[in-house]
Length: 295
Length: 268
Image (cartoon, rainbow over all chains, first blue to last red; front, side, top):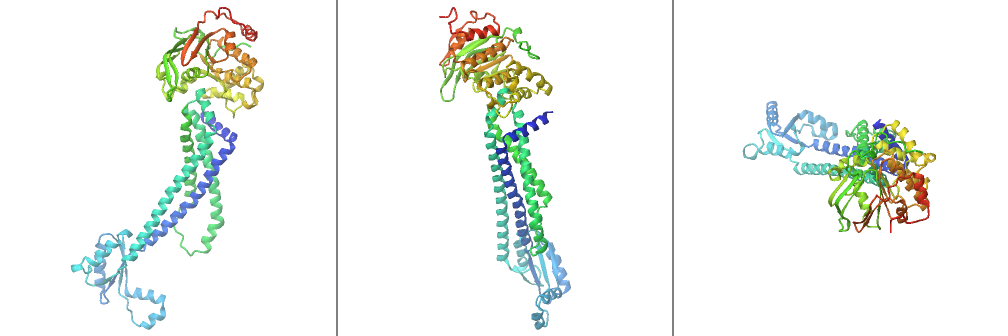
């Protein structure tokens, strides 16, 4: 009975003040659209950055004379180092095959296999790559590599540093943008709600004089916020869904050039948008009302 | 049209205790700007009385009203309503306190988005009144105030007098023991004012204590009720009730109000 009354009150006031309600709904719609586009973009960017970082590794080249015994010894030594996640062994034959595949003519001229056995050492965390590098290259006696059979450790310090810096920057920028966007959304929605409440402050005053408790006045506004927020988010989801099906999905199918980074699933996006739309409007309504309740 | 006996309301006229309905004791109100609203005002109003509060603009009439609905808190002294000190009422409980008051304002303060019926019903919904309650009481009170034909009109479709009637209906639908009216006739022509006063008198005769703030001197003179006059935040006149308390019917009352202005006997 009580909830029914509040619901009817909310619907009544939405009908009676259609323009402010519509403005609030449009604000939620636009904000949620932007958010709905932005969330996958941020995720794709982060995904790309991470996949670049994932490729950061230390290459260890063995002497040409290294035997299979040397290889297995070095492999176990590498695995014992700190911050090493895994070690991938590429024998000289495997390396040769791979290279021949890329440029058969050049390697045919070469005649013999100049490539050494190689270890790709992958650090547990991309930012630890330099530590791993020094461990391998300089921890032996007199600044020599860990094992005598190691010929050379790849030295791509500057490249690696740049990759790490750039990807860090990208991730941080995306995070800052997300926070700013979320703040702007909340501010925008709260402001619109406050405007629509402002036009009804006299009504609130009268309600208080008749002896309505704060929550009695507040509930219909909160319910109205939930309805407006959900409707706005729902419309945004419909628009996003149509765009996805009409534009994005064919693109993904026809031009699989860029490996699609893993992004939020559409269902989860729907839940997030609906939830945040309804929650922000409801909390916004409830909070904005506070100043008018002081009569 | 007889006033229905107050249902489930306390017997207002019965005088369950000797405590006055309103008691101001040394009440002061200074506004933050330094203006003095009230200066050490003391008076009390007995149960079932009909009292006028007069004075020029800025004399403190509205301050008294706003203190009584606890929209403001006094800066000194104590106010008691039905024996209970208003200082003891927490912010949370104000809403419940206000349900025991009927309040009528010069600008009616109706909800513009609701019909006459819904405006009155809202006062019942606020207190958790059931649908049945509302169906029972609202038509009654609207008949009493002569608004039966305007049930489904919105406030902006009504005349000033009719709007004030709605506001009185809303104030009285809960049968509060105390009715406050702040300049109820301030926006109305003399003839309509008489109707409104008559309605207030009729409500008073059911046992409800009525306090009316007004600057309509002729009306006050004709009514011959107790008068409290404020000037610069002090009580400057408190004319005893004894002279005026002859019981009249509302018809006699209205006739007297409409009669050409004559000073009541005994008043210089």
